[in-house]
Image (cartoon, rainbow, N blue to C red; front, side, top):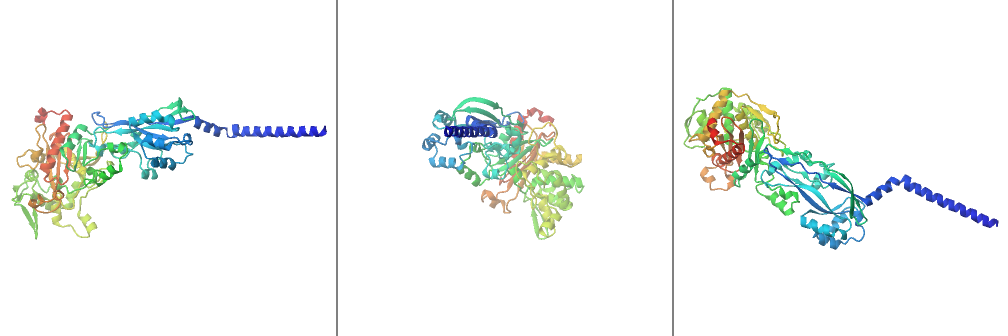
Length: 592
């Protein structure tokens, strides 16, 4: 009896001990680790899907949309729902991709990570429909959606508008898009990149209850996305389109500005590229073709290329001479076709010479000998002072791309860089925009815009803004200087002997200046027979209407030959397009 009682006691203690262990375990699971296991349960039951934020729309100055938002579909696999029995071969057939590639993508990501594995991106609507119809056969297979872009104008304005793509591996390693949700398309060029944060928006979330196969049962909660900010650019897309078409396949650049505030009306860099190539993932073959293109389509020639300005620089030399009082409108030079200094001969572009030449004729007919003599009277340092004040020799700071500063040399610059003094012949060359002098098309636009508005250099503004922009520099030009230079530039286009006659318009009076920048010094008769790469560069700067400017621009045509013949008609087409877009009528010509 005593043994029986002892056995019962032992069993009782054992029972109590087991019960206590169960209680402790229950306490551990429910109290100590309750939150942990609750989260695991929720992860098994609830899926969080990102709702992409609509990206802000980019408009031109007249409210015309330059971009459209478009869906971007991705076939993804949720790892923890696909651990058992995944039919790789069947999935590969469904996605129309090699089994090896599919297997590598799945193996690359750790299986315990809950983040979906992207299997195939850039799906079209037919592929999405096919996958949705077979999803129940492949646990964990989902179709995710992102927002990308469509660019209705294709390559038109590509260097200005830019494009979107997924961040590259190199960008992610550098932490350039830290905090941006994985898989978000980001701006990689142009305005899309410059204002990416403002355009991007904030993604939302959708909390979905799912079953063990990953099938959606019901929506538990939705956090709506926040749309990105819309932007209105200062560019006029109709003018932009007309400007690019006027180049007729030639390489070059154009920058058109509103001279009153620096707003960019058109920005052309050719050859260009189609931004639509990037939004669904550019193929290696397409990328190599763009990278190897001899025209360098990713080079923004407006800001990143610098060239001798040629005779458009004579505007600077003329302004400096008038403002410094070394010449007036009656000062004249006898041009016989060349000027000799010691053993050196400095020729005029017109071999037989221009005869007796004063300021207006020198600008209208672009006489080199006149400006050699004016350069001698001024000296290089005074020419450089006015060139800098008119926006040359300084990067504008628009930040669309890395910008070149060009070069406006001085006597001290040469001594510092070359270790030898400045020579008179170098002043001759600089006075006509050759030698060491180099400018970008953007700087040439700033120069002519400043002349059009009376002397203020505005930094180019990409957005249509209601408030005024801050000037970069301001040059107080006398009324006499403005009258003489402006009248001369009208003559360049309107006079029978003007070098810019091909820019003459029937709907608006254009003032301008031609420029032909020498590439190699060889006779013109020989140059015509050689390859295009030996031809001179063509320049034209202009503004219109001449009496009350609404647009100022620079046109550069790479290896285009004579500025008046090649760049002049492009300037005319661009100006006329903007006049029409702005509601300017030919009958107003008499007023201007």
